[in-house]
Image (tube, rainbow, N blue to C red; front, side, top):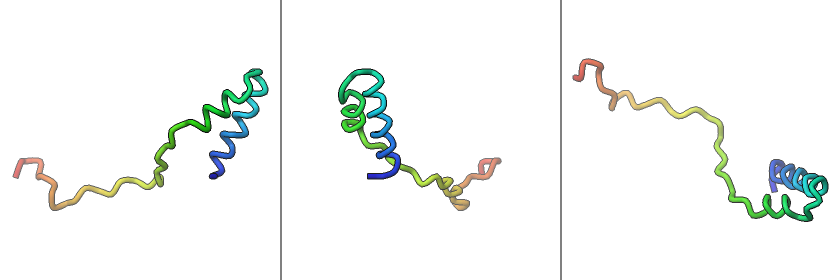
Length: 57
């Protein structure tokens, strides 16, 4: 379990207590679809050999 996942579960437990809805938020977090994590690195620049010249040549 990552730090973000643990934080989400702790927050869900607090929401459950405040909303008087036992296990609603915790169940929702547990059943949530996983999200793809990106590295935050920029995309590589385009290949110079495949670029077209502005004049179309």
